[in-house]
Amino acid sequence: MEKTISVDLKNHLSEMERLRQIVEEFSQKHQLDESTTFALDLVLEEVVTNVIKYGYQDQERQDRIHVDLSLMNGELTIVIRDEGRPFDPTAHPEPDLELPLATRPIGGLGIHLVRNFMDSVEYKRQGNENVLTLKKRVTIQGQ
Amino acid sequence: MQIRQNKKDDVLILELEGRLDVNTSNTFSDRVLSLIGAGEKYFVIDLSQVVYISSSGLRAFLTLAKKLSENGKIVLSSLRQEVKEIFDISGFGSLFPIVASQEEALRIFQS
View 1 (cartoon, rainbow over the protein chains, first blue to last red):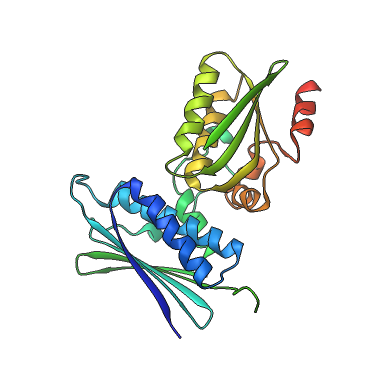
View 2: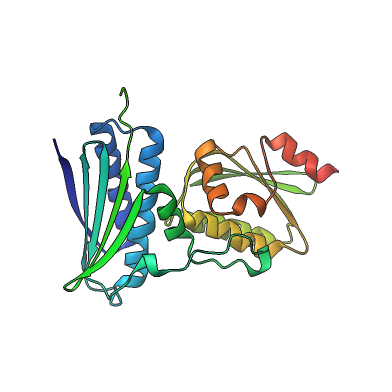
């Protein structure tokens, strides 16, 4: 049985708290364990924050960021869609984690974390939308 | 994000509580930057009450480490497992000394 939740967010960082509450409800409803909830929280923050910061150039517009969360047959699927400029977060090179402090860059960490916590991360440009699909096999509590 | 601040000898102890995310990390970095500006050089950052950290939180630590590097020292203590994991995945586990308790962190400054 598929269980899906959809949410539209404005492209503003103040929306992050509302997103977090929705994740919390989704997680409780489907009995996801703590580490899965943490991962879900984190990847959504990283992706949505990137869209808000870099995707929409005109901050005044109340553009929508659409998030679908679904759980089917033990697999979590997250789809994030936005109408910002074409932006493929997966095209960012992996940060060099061996660099010493002085030369360590600040960027690239977000998508690195997303890749680490998700089983798959796929981007496509569909019409005027960026579509990012994240998948992860999850543990339901009690199973 | 709440911050409790104490000083022991030369060492500034900051106990953080809550989340270090895109909206709260600035509170933390602003505080430490102003303390560095006021001349503080030695910090213990106790994260026992920090339940979540994202790249924004990591970025705040990196900024502080870069600001301090030559003249001071930051030691992190009491990271919860899921927070420690974020540090390790990002390669930040090697950027700062990370120890299990505040007491252990303070001992580093005494030696």
